[in-house]
Length: 219
Image (cartoon, rainbow, N blue to C red; front, side):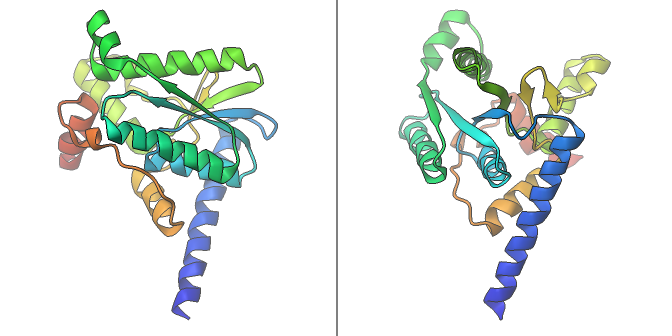
């Protein structure tokens, strides 16, 4: 009876998030069933849940993973994990290795900004190369939105900055923007989804991590 209750609970959590996910996509007009989606997947819990939700909803997906080479064996572990996820779901995968440190030093910009520039440039290249890829999906969620608004507020941006992350911006869509991190983690736990942890997410030298770990818990 206990096992049966657990299975029922798992099914309820899955169906609840899945329905909210598909409803959000329709409400925001993010994309349509016939669209081909490129998913940005690091291997963390958020993109893994996004991948499983898209797959369970029947969308045509491909995964894209960039290995920034910043964490040695851990970076390679992440790449291998995402390759395994693509294999498990029988979906195409694109992998790119980047010279992140060299690019940052040459252009005198931060590691985080470098990573953002490199990955989005590569995503655009992939979509330019394969015109059947109609939308890029990222796993930004409600907590990311709060962090972004607070960071923009502290930087002194205007009204536009306080609007936070858009659910749809050109061909970039964020289907998880309705969900908080807790719901996403709960879904991964109950569905027993494997994912990898990025150790750099605990380093407060990065602005977003500082807001996530130090500022938001005080609000």
